[in-house]
Image (cartoon, rainbow, N blue to C red; front, side):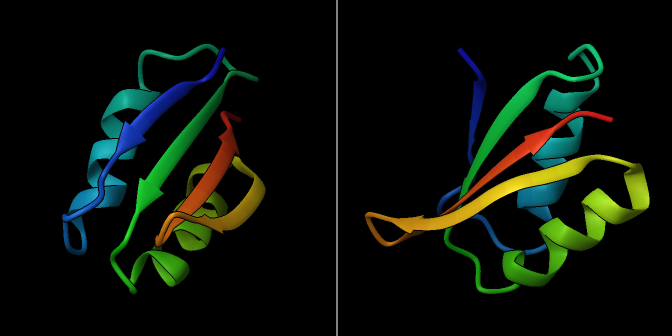
Length: 73
């Protein structure tokens, strides 16, 4: 089961900062899911992945939140 970071209700840059903090403890290849409702996350999460070497596996909308599934690089 992948880890879930619930960042709903948080504004930029907090969703990505919370995600980055939780990812530190994960092994390479591990999956983590971020839930966010900050409109800036649409730009911030892909940028974070590109800069940090992680893979953005999936993005979707669910129950009014954006769902991002990442694989740690």
